[in-house]
Image (cartoon, rainbow, N blue to C red; front, side, top):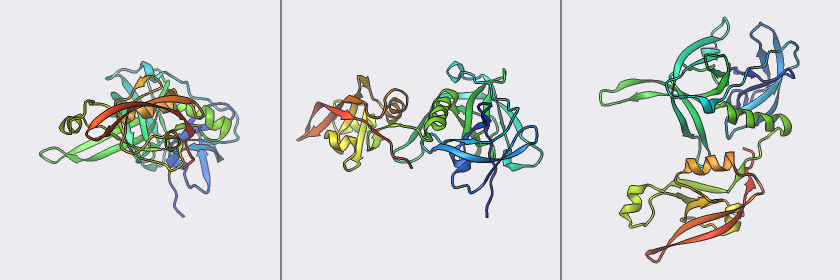
Length: 290
């Protein structure tokens, strides 16, 4: 049997702990060790692969929930601290300090899913930090550490230092509330495979538009298929909001639209060497559980 180590954040006195989905996915047994040294068996309450978040629960007393901050108030260059069981080393969690390098970052996890509004930081984040808190200097939770990029690059093949990403606390809180209540998150879903419209390519082929999201394919009998949205069209507006990139569309589906909601979708369709705009009515579905 294999074992792994991750980190989590105590949310309330009922024993709910927020962590990453990839920390607990497929686990047959979970043990949560608190900062005071007490250990408890933990059960999974709910998971959301879309945002890589999960809620587990322990039966324990005298818990100290995290103080929630506001990631929307963060500024680039602001000092932040990452806490976690880096590399699973014995002796308890480690602390690393850095700055907010950028805000509003996006990472594609698969063809249909993009994690948006991530906080980029240069704090040292390693295996074992996943699910741990990113806090400001006031001790307030502003993010959940979820990913790190490493590699080599540059003309001289200089090693690139790890770039860390954290899920903003507002998204984490929204997801956590639904996981505790429902065991899942009801994300709005169009049932499509997407790609950004590249402005240079659009100009090269003579398109009169430079921004939008290309529908590469649709799920058979999915919401978009039923609405008459076909592969090859370019989505330019949904529910009155202009769509420039896949990140724009993903952010809209996660933050403002709801499953079961009817929305107007404006698409640009190329036919016979010309283009035309068309508005369709789409009833959003609920994203299937992965």
